[in-house]
Image (tube, rainbow, N blue to C red; front, side, top):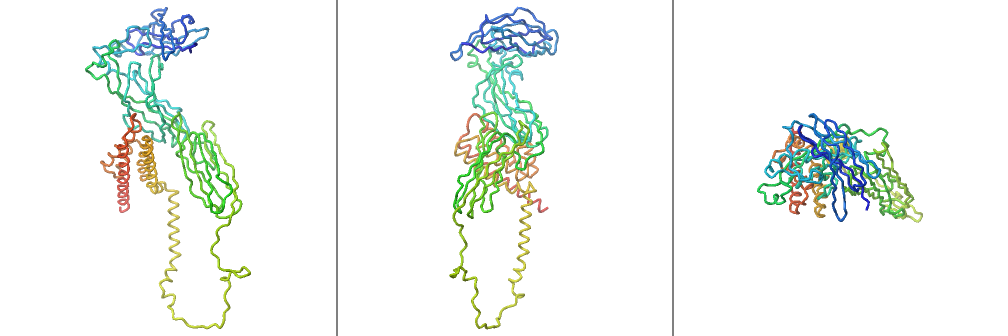
Length: 606
């Protein structure tokens, strides 16, 4: 059967000594030797070609019942000077079709400074060979793992984004084929200051993917994938992802029993970190429509009403569903301006997030309940939703269709007095006045009755209460610290309730996400902090300034580390551990509330 042709350029090492040779391999897969025109050696800079005629080798392999063949051409080069060098692109013709490779960069250092080499298998032409350290120097070779042997690469989907636009960052671990990593874990608390972040799913046991990087063969796996949404404009930085991992490098490729009978631990723990990522966040352009409330992404809207003919007092459900890619968690309920005869209630909100792909996608549903109090034909107006589409850099407005509702029946009237035969109410007609008798009543004067003064003071009390309520409403709208402090407890209770639901559903990852949001959200609301924009040390400093004792701060840090470890660990925590974490979250919120209230009372007294 026909195979796909794959041409790759590999080198023995990318850092060599000034007195060493470097082997350049041109590997052609999926084609027979007779279909290949013998290629010319690629040109080089800073290197000299040793021989013009290449050494050749043919390889066959059977993988999953499929036969794969490859042809390898090899040349050797020697350095002519120290410093940067490179082997330029190679060209090969296969079945009248020309293929080109990428250039390979080489670094030439003084011979005394060259990196320590691992022992290699016998065939210099086998690009699939697994290098290993010599048996008499195994421990020293394992400790000499460099950033070239194993490293982390952070790949963002974009370097520039609008405020609230989604940027996906994928962290990939690259390691040479003679290295076997295991038990990878976070070395510290990874954070992204100035971003709202949503974790995306990655495979718990990924299969390594083979790739070529600057002429070296690597295996790669995806460590972490996260969607970040910049919450403000400017240049924002995502912290490096630091991990600890145990790696195994075989002592000798010819001794398969050395791994099992060695007295030394074949694994060593190393730490690697990805580079920090700078993302330029741009402000949204002017000209936003009135229905725009900060949504950025690509969305669709659907709307339906459960019935268009009801009796007075029966309920109507209007369901609005927003679906697409974007930060659905920050999407606020859409305003529904129902006619005055409808009694409207706050919408019920449901959200479903699909974090299994490359982007955060899902839907959010708002269900509005309307109850008519009068009969007639009324129109439920259209609902508008506006968002900014970063792909077209334009604002878009989605609008539902207005719905006509027929309300039948009779509204319950207040209890009326009995009526006369003409329909006039009896209680509205005064009785005839016959033989009036005037008499003097012995009652106290108004000025001596205390209720008189109470009634006179009542309007002032009502004015004062109205003023206080108006001031409260105004402060909620203008003072974010006051408003966040007022909703700290309800928001924390909501997240804890969701965590209990995730506990019963045996969803540990969502469970620990809700616990972390409950505690950090409570701290942010009480102290008016952007808790997701603070690193753990910065959060600890702010809590110390707020008067929180060191013991409580240490317990909080342990709690947050437990949440991070449970969310990223390959093994799921037990039910006992999850119950203990839930109790710890309740205790922390109670302790934090008592401390913040005490500090607030002390500030007021001063």
